[in-house]
Image (tube, rainbow, N blue to C red; front, top):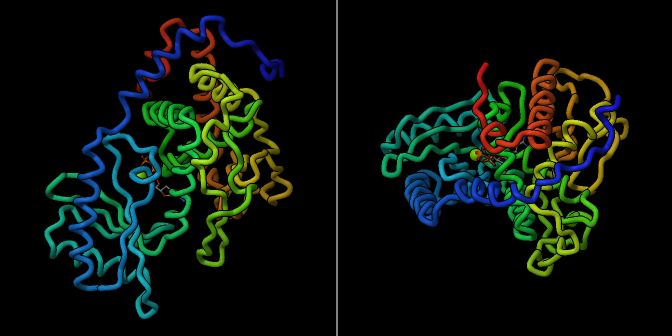
Length: 337
Ligand code: 3AT
Ligand code: MG
């Protein structure tokens, strides 16, 4: 298919860097956001410790991995060592506790892959999802945050991609498209594969952080302050990278055979993972390996219908980035059915 051929980037690409940077800046949360989050965490801790004195709360997801917008929800993990009560019952009990402490819109969601309690903090109006003992998510949050400290271009690219995905409505796992977490992994992977590389592969380096969570060993090099300037050999601007990211997912990714893996810093084969056929609801049409839970394909939610939508959106974005003079408007134009 000749659409696979390498095409040259539009000649005026550099004029777009300031435009992308201003979009990026408009999405970064203000300084006060962190204080609000910590305030919620404190009041929650107080309420929960009455019932479970040994419970600890951890922030995870975009409020802690540095990839959050100012209006992102807060994801909280309740860590508790108690084998006497099932997770399902714990979620129900947690919901009761929060209701009695006057948190708003409290709702226990027990039938999800990860059971959670949803609620809203009355003081700040911020919505929170609270899960129980999901420590792998706390560790992958730290990994993303550490990657973000190596090169600013990851932060910029991921914000722009997340913003695009949200407006184009391809950021809904229940609709068969991808989670924010999956998009950030796609950005990390893309920057690991630039030549010269903009990001290293932290899990292939000497491990300075090691933690075993539910029989999974999580190990990687986390002294990222020692990697400042890692990507300096590569001078690509954010405009070139956004262009390249969509070119890759529109025309160069091999959907038939490849799995992207930030754990190895390469693409690996579906064959090797035994992700070649549908098993249950997992179809493996777009494969993204979780960095720690390596049996988990973050693209598992993608089905026949949504893969088509996703690929059309990648192609749409690539086309706009290549040809559209008014690109910032069209690229981020809200999806209209
Ligand atoms: P938003 O800004 O809320 O869209 P987020 O990074 O908080 O982005 P999610 O709310 O989708 O992303 O997920 C919250 C965290 O849960 C992110 C990641 O640490 C973890 N997580 C999400 N999906 C998965 C998954 N399929 N496997 C493992 N961890 C996941
Ligand atoms: Mg979130």
